[in-house]
Amino acid sequence: MGRKKRVPRVMAAHSVGVRWITLIYFCSGICSLIDEVVWVRLLKLTLGNTVYASSIVISMFMGGLALGALLMTRFADRVERPLRLYALLEVCATFSALSLPIALRFADQGYRWFYTQAHPSPAGLLALQVIVSAVLLLVPAMVMGSTLPLLSRYVTAVHDRVGRLVGRLYALNMLGATLGTFLAGFVLIRSVGVMGTLYIAAGINLLVAVSGWVLARSQASVPTAPADAGGGGESWSLARRRKNASGFSSWQPSLLVALSASAMSLSGCGVLSFRSAGTPMFSAPF
Image (cartoon, rainbow, N blue to C red):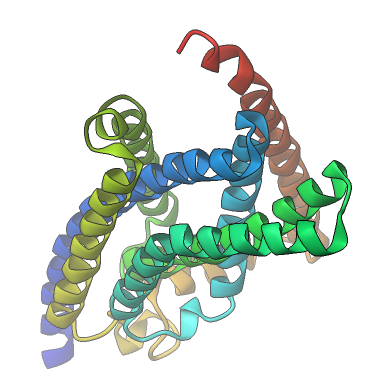
């Protein structure tokens, strides 16, 4: 009886936490795209070409997001305190973004040494610069990408509204990314320069990390379902998804997943191709 009385309080506290975490993730989206714009400017100094820099940043940023999310999905369901781990990941993302200019500076010294010792062709030197830049960008992008599965795990731990909650989380993050891109390109870099913009993004990101940590302290652990919700300690959303999935035949989910993944991959490839192709066209007026 006592457990049944605690369930509404757990759900109410969790609902407040969900609203806060959507705001936190909105701010995280602002920081992520400010960092991306700054990275393009930094790589332009290394590669000497905006198209090359933009293409590398876009490909590594999106690829890192995907790879980080893929890796975290293997562990997210076993994390009892996802908000605490999220806060730590935001701290890692902050310091990896701040260390990128230093890493690029050391890489430039390595390029000069390699050029004087090996005398590579221009194409060979460019290939080396592309590979090194891609590796340096992949690390912070993977850290950023690993946060969405954690927050999705948190917001769907009690409520059986997976599509609505995760969709709202992702939508607000993209709105924050849109705002961050605008602020970086039209306000911050013009006002405080590239490094000043990077420091502002780092400050906001640290504030996001602190907010996530404080919220994690107020939430003892990921809320679990009552014993009669189907399976003792499994989450309500997991129990409902298992119940809904029982009506499908064994081949239907695999086929639907394969078709959906193929369609989304082609769509993403087309969108980012148009983005890369449009960079030189829209950069000319500015």
